[in-house]
Length: 204
Ligand SMILES: C[S@@+](CC[C@H](N)C(=O)[O-])C[C@H]1O[C@@H](n2cnc3c(N)ncnc32)[C@H](O)[C@@H]1O
Image (cartoon, rainbow, N blue to C red; front, side, top):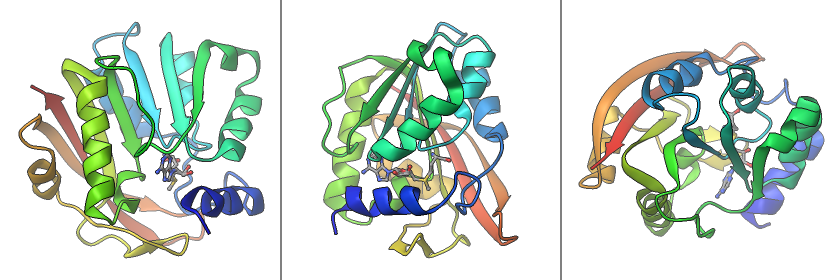
């Protein structure tokens, strides 16, 4: 099964609030975006946004230049439907982030919660980092949230990587420099605790 088909299967069999990564609101992401985006006119892309309520909340906070990309058409349709007519103000892209060619220097802030850690092959990580490096403006930010060193080793049956902020920095240098990090314990809808690392990286 292709990676896209795998995610379609996940989203067509589980409700938005049943998946392990569900949170009613991505509070930590919202806080970091507000801190580092540089204002509500910032161009922001949520990579692997899925069915998350991040776009809903950013629209409500007045952000005007939003893009949500995901490999799953089903997930983006759920998000668009939930947002309603305001969804027309968001640019929606169904694509694999390791294959798409995003426009150069297009985004002030690139957000990824729980997507990069699924890239277990070095070539896929390289493709992702090349795209982020090209698409983020000089001085712009990459907000990356992955499983932490004590996080799960699998998610939705897929192997994952686990990262400390320093491990992410080692992968992202020299194009990006770590400017903030934190650890979060996420409680899944089933009650399990998962350690997440958040790193904010500035593009040189
Ligand atoms: C664990 S979910 C996280 C969803 C959302 N970021 C959140 O925090 O609620 C991972 C998401 O990444 C998407 N995804 C996985 N691999 C991808 C890829 N190579 N390109 C684009 N999206 C991908 C999946 O479809 C899924 O929506």
